[in-house]
Amino acid sequence: MAPEQQQTRSDHDQKTAGHKDASHTKTRALVLLPFSGSQRHRLRGVAPGDRRHEPWREPEDQLAEAIGLATAIDLNVRDSAIVPIQTIKPALLFGTGKVKEIADHIEADEIDLVVIDHAVTPIQQRNLEKAWNAKVLDRTGLILEIFGRRARTREGRLQVELAHLTFQRSRLVRSWTHLERQRGGVGFLGGPGETQIETDRRLLQERIDKLRGDLLKVTKTRALHRRGRRRVPYPIVAIVGYTNAGKSTLFNRLTGAKVFAKDQVFATLDPTMREVALPSGRRVILSDTVGFISDLPTMLVAAFRATLEEVIEADLILHVRDISHPDSDAQRADVENVLRSLDVEVDSAKSNIIEVWNKIDQVDCNHREQLTAAATRYELPPILTSAITGEGLDALAQVVDEWIGKSDAEIELDVPATAGQLSHWLYENAQVLARETDELGTMHYRLRIAGENLGKLQAQLKIAGLKIPIRADPESWEGMEK
Image (cartoon, rainbow, N blue to C red):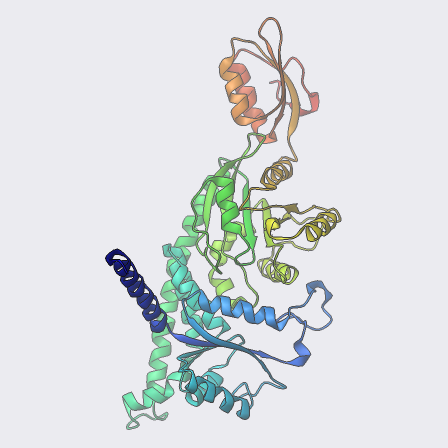
């Protein structure tokens, strides 16, 4: 072997060894999905007979999502399993035989952390950690960990910490054992550890109160920004959707921004807003928001309400769905549940939600035809898009433009050759549908212009020395002649 080849092989071996070492240093995790036979095909948390939220989820898809959540915080998922349970045991969640079986597996595979994709009570968590000699993290705790790592702005970090402390406060029972060791059992009327627990709770509550005060200041600042935008005024278009549906990629494609976008859950936590010009020349504020997920912890919805107020007050909501995902319909129901909790109108004809069926590039021809046919049955037909290839984005911009521009006016306007500045303004602030130039150089325009811009156009006409369009729709200009 040539010396150069030996060096290359040596470098490769060192890199490979480095990757192995990095993998080995990651926390070794086991992901478990407790599942009852009676739960098959049933969405989490949905009462039987509630037909609004069909179709149901398959346990294999739920487990795959849980593994995705675990890998999102760089856990080394060594194994995963769906664990059948007949009834939930108050002390251990699982039956004692199953707990022993899992304990043997944990010991054999040297598992450090067990992720349970289910709500786990403080008592269950404490007992399972003792039985398995490994840390236990339930679904809520796992999502909080992800949010804690991904938040970048001060507001995001405050919201995550508030949610985390609210969650932690309810689980102080876990600290009893170590508190007995720390404080002993002498001189405390309520028994060993009780005084320290009360101190912990008081300190937690003080920190929670401070965080709420800090968030209130941030919320007021955000409200001032919203009032400032209303004075512009630019309509707000909010992008919502299940986590990893492609919202940030779509946002980047529409705005030319460089928001972090990656094929992983909760890639975006902090809201981002950009100004976008639509085909008519109208400008809107496009807002990218945190992704939703099934069983989103209640304290997270409450903590992020300030951020989600951009959704509540939006003029139009684009619900982006990963239409290639097998659980797309179930994910839609989860997003709508969160929107309902924010008092956003979802079910009536007054809804201001347009669905965007994203990742259309990842479905086959037959499925695409079915989706195209299904879209026609909606009152507000969904737009089929691919944020990666750009397919359907022009149609999406046009639909948004038409929806926002329901008060638009179509007018005809003659602009003399000497009014070049007015022509420039028209192209910047209106949609030029047609233009003809006569032998004198006069430009005959047919325009679509936003209702809120009619007053600005009137001002531009006065600057150009034109009092009123030569040809115009009288209703559009009612009251504007003065």
